[in-house]
Amino acid sequence: MKPLSLNLAKSGVLLISTCVRLEIYGEEEAIRDVAGPIFLGLPCKRIAGADNIAIRLAEIASGAHSQIFGEGYISDQLEKAIEPLGPHFNIFNIGKAAIKIGRAARERQGFKASLDYDEIVREFVAARFPNGEQCDRLYVVGSGMLGQGLIRSSVRGRFRGTVVVTRDPKNFRRRTRSLDHKEVALLRPAEIGHRIEPLSMAIIATADVQREYKTSIYDALLRLQPRAVVDLSSIPLLSSAEIGKLSYVTIYDQEFLQYIAKNNKALAPKRPLLLSDIRTAIETVQFEGAH
Image 1 (cartoon, helix red, strand yellow):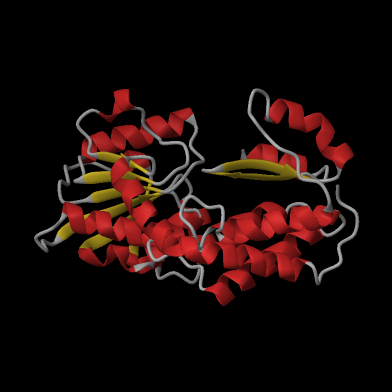
Image 2: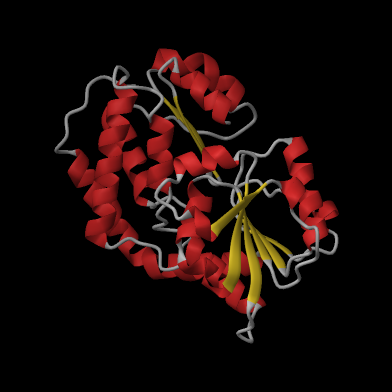
């Protein structure tokens, strides 16, 4: 999706691709030719008008439509998707304003996940290591936004060390200059699993996995044999046929969904207030063009 997103941005088309949505925005003439191939065979609906588009994007940025209500990563993901377009496109300016409005409404209404990805992973760690034992290493596969968030959280406090599994350690260091890299080891998949670590845990936090790299990660996990593999990617890395003896959990498994349900039940009463707040805020903003 990333190459497609960058290519569409050149024509002023915003592509939003996450675990629960695939959406495109832009001037009608810009999206007419690309909408058909992208949504071929998929049910979809059309949102027209700058105000309606801004409302939708602000709602997304607030976490109102996330699988985990109020999760904190989506607004940064949306901002990252918008950046390649540039201010000469109307959708860029609409999107920027919408993100600001969505974030502010989220703060005002306290629409924040009590069980975000970090907290849910922490629950998994507690469940897999219930006796307070000293854990081996935490392996975080992926160096993007979610992976960095996990590294900076308290999740790794139970482990004697943290390993970021990445194809490009140099790029990771460049993008995380504020992180103390002495506390984090950077390894490629081929460098993992020279010994079994049954007291370790692996978190998959990337969706940008080509077939060859997927095979490398899979082989590394088989060598490592961690206590558990928690896959946070929108498209699970492994199929049921590939799991084998690995203890493997995805965001679509019941064990994960129960935490999402608990979080969403707590935030559901605030959601109508959040949506109303966003609509009221959008009414005070004047947008140009955009169909």
